[in-house]
Image 1 (cartoon, rainbow, N blue to C red):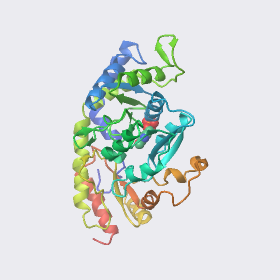
Image 2 (cartoon, protein in one colour):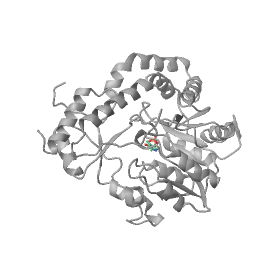
Image 3 (cartoon, rainbow, N blue to C red):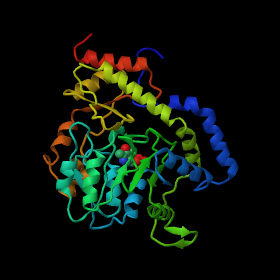
Image 4 (tube, helix red, strand yellow):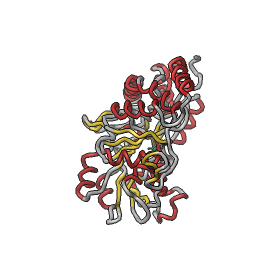
Length: 372
Ligand SMILES: *Cc1c(COP(=O)(O)O)cnc(C)c1O
C-alpha cells in the first residue's frame, strides 16, 4: 500500500481476507444441511450472541429496524401511543415507531456524549408515552441510571437500541441487559456485521422473547397456529453461520478499535479539533470515531483531497427530516442536536486499520489546522 492510497471509512475486504476459509466452511455446512431459514445455525447463534451480550434469550430477525419494530410490538406499542427517542440517531430508530402506527417523540441529547438527555426526556413524556428508546450511539452507552429511574418511576418500558453497541458496557453492566428488551443490527458495517441484512432482539424475559418469536414468523405459536397477526422477518441460516464465525473475533476487533481510538485521541490532542470526550461510565466500543470541528466542510474537503474518506453521523437531526415534517417540530426545538449536527465528522475506524494509517490521518488533520 502506497502512503497516499485511499483510506476508507470502513474496509470489509481486509476482514474477509482474514476470514475467508472459516466463512466458506460455514457456508458449506449450511448448503450441505439443505436447511436455510430458522434452523440449527440460527438457534446456535441466538444462544451464543445472547450469552455474549449478557442476556438470556436471543431472537434472530431480518434486520435491526425489524428488531426495534418487533420489540415495540411485543411491548404492545400501537396507534395512539408515543415513543421517546433521541433526535440524533439513525433514522430507523424512528421508523420502527411509525411502523407500529405510533408517534415518535424526539428528545434532545447530552452535549458531551451525544446520547439521550435525561432532563429533556422528562420534559417530553406524556400520559401517552408507551416506551423509551435510548440509543447507545457510536458505541457509547447512554446514561442508563438516570433514564431507568425516570422510566421506572412512571412504569414505562425501555427498549435499548444497541445497533452500534455490541459489547459496550455501562459501568460493569452490559448494554442491552438494562431495559425490557434490546435490538441489535448486524448490517455489514456494524461492529458485528453479516454479509447481508440481519438483526436480533435480546431479552431476559421469556414471555417477551416468545412474543417476538411469534411476530417474526407470521404470528405462529407453532406451525399453522397463528395466535397474533405477525410478519415475516427471519434470520437465515447462512447469515447466522457467518455471524457465528465472526462473533468469535468480536472481542479482539473491539480491542483493536479501542486501541486505534486511543491513538487518534493522543495524536489529535491540541490539534484544533475536539475528540470524543467521554465521562467515565462505561466501555466504549467505538463503532464510530466522531470528532467535532468548527470548519467541518473545509476539513472534509481537505481529507477527501488526501484520499481519506469521512462521513457525518448524522448531518440532519430527525426533526428536520422531511419525512417527519408532520410531527410539527421546528428549528430551535432541539438546541444541542442542532448545534452538533454541523460540527461532527466521523474519521475512518475499523479493526484492520493500521496505526500508520491513523498517523497519516492525524497528520492530515493537523496540517489542515496550520501545522506542518
Ligand atoms: C444501523 C442502525 C439501525 C438499523 O439497523 P438495520 O439493520 O440497518 O435495519 C437502527 N438503529 C441504529 C442506531 C443503527 O445504527
